[in-house]
Amino acid sequence: MIKNNLALVSGANGHLGNNVVRLLLKKGIPVRAAVRNRNNTKPFEGLNCELVQADITDKTSFVQALQGVETFYAVGAAFKLWAKDPKKEIYDVNINGTRNTIEAAAEAGVKKIVYVSSIAALNYSKLPAREIGGYNPDRRDMYYNSKNDGEKLAFELAQKLGVELVSVMPSAMIGSDAFFPLNVSYNILKLILNKEIPVDTKITLNWIDVKDVAEGCYLAAQKGRPGERYILANEKCMTITDTTILAGKLYPELDVKVPGSVPKLLLYAIAGIMEVTAKFNGKPPLLTRKDIAMFSGLQQDFDISKSRNELGFNPKSPELAVKEALDYLMKNKNLLGLEKASFYGV
Image 1 (cartoon, helix red, strand yellow):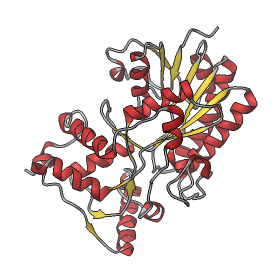
Image 2 (image 1 turned 135 degrees about the vertical axis):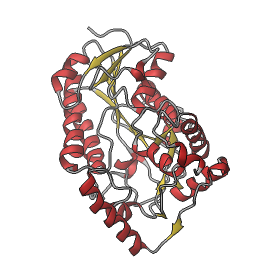
Image 3 (image 1 turned 45 degrees about the horizontal axis):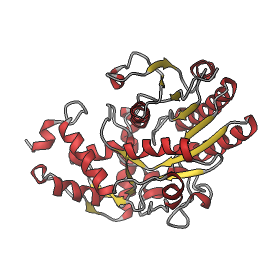
Image 4 (image 1 turned 60 degrees about the horizontal axis):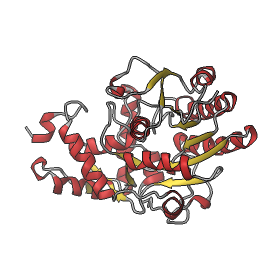
């Protein structure tokens, strides 16, 4: 039996998932938070929510977790752009996770699913990118492939199984209430503050405050039309270099170094060296040749009029989002793994 307004959030200890949990609780909605490891309770301190263990790779665990749920916020996914075996660790996890959780939701009698896709699933050939522009034709990245194919699969399964599904497509999420380890987007700000970005890659990011994305997810559940996609981003992107300049203005005492421009061939050479190093130490490279090929010079600008008009989505500016995120890192540098020596140049 469906319980009145009960919502389940997967990936509830992640940056977006935890903010969705907090938002729903503030709105008086009972929440069941699904995590892979119930021992990680820090993100839920002081929160009056039910904590359950469920893994997107295990359909049975979600059939159980979704019992009595009215709205399922499908946030949980493998969010990383590098892995030793990207097909197995990223693509297969996200595709199978989409299939498992949506089939489980249908079996459990869930009424509505808010499926968290990504701007990675948009077609960038005509800017500003819009929801009706189709899917990303660039197949060089397994995470991007998983978000493109995963969203298509989500809509197909929802229609087949008779479940209402709305897709939301966030951009680079930053903001307070983050937990270590940092997500991919937030980690770039950490690298800027630690002066670890050596060159101007001409890579852009569309910064968005995670709380605005959480609000967008809620609005999608309330107002979104089944079978539709909604971009949760800002209209304009910023280069990593522009973000670095902003950080330097906000915190002049850090003496943040603005990366210099180098020829693209040299960028590829630097990325290649980083990739080789990553194979030996097992750590994600700061830059890959694929990153340069796919993202250097790519403008990530979006038409968000559909989300504004239909959902009432109204995000803060990217500059303000960056400022607040940097403030948060500065106040929590020990918690978030930032080295004091890097901040004060000693």
